[in-house]
Amino acid sequence: MAGRLKVGRLNNDSPARYAASFTSFLDATEMSKESYYHSYESKVPDSTLCEAGTEVRVLGIGSGSGEADSIITKKLLQRHSSVFNRVVEPSGEMIEKYKTLVREDTSLSAVKYDWRQQTTEEYFQTKENTKFHLIHAINVLYYVEDPVATLRNMWEQLADGGCMLVTMESEKGDWGKLQLKLWEYFGQGDRLDTSLRMAGDVKRWLDAMGATYVSFQNKVNVNATECFEKNSEEGMLLLDFITHTPYTSDIPEIQAMALEFIRRHSSVVDDRIIFLSVEETIVAFKKAT
Image (cartoon, rainbow, N blue to C red; front, side, top):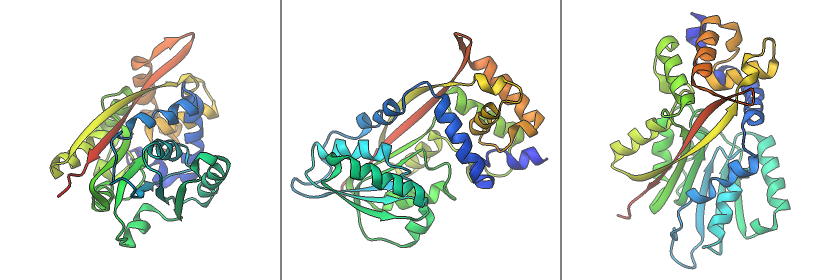
């Protein structure tokens, strides 16, 4: 029963464990961090988002230390002379890292930043009137309290003619399929109340809204070899991140299912067990009324 209550709740129940497991995940991805973050540049629409000479306004939800945000902002600066960027991020440590990145990158000097150290829920409770031409949430909607309410709030703050960019794991990839299988066997309640949320959940909401959107897939190879090494702390942390479940190694039935699935759906390259993550970036457009 304990396993059933924990599945999908890594970040909710064990934030410190989540932070450590995320680091293990980054170390296990077979892609440089620079290449990973630069993959977002091509997802930003090439079209001008507002009238010529007008300041383009951007809202970043859960911006972290700013690597992906800064790539997006630089793409906008190719077409817009002025950018206003509101950053919503609950971690003071992450905001300081983001500010350091901005100070050290002179190409961002034309950007006006508005720093908001708040959770997504706290920010939207302020009922801001500002409308934004671009709103993005990159791998963030796993961790908000209510993803549907967050999407609705983002959409309401989007200016007519603007676009919303959301990145989530796709249920079409092996990683997403594993998470859905774990939920099918061990989940209780509503999956959307846990971190086991998928790109398809976002698209279903957009479909219900009648919104127009395009989506892009980004395949990321994850070296899962350590997950199969007995007593490997790195492997245990990585498995926690893959399952979004804290201390998976203490829940034999979940650990066994996850490892069996990973082994069956991985490729072996030079003795490395490579498990495929498929991230999906959805770009939705708000029609001018």
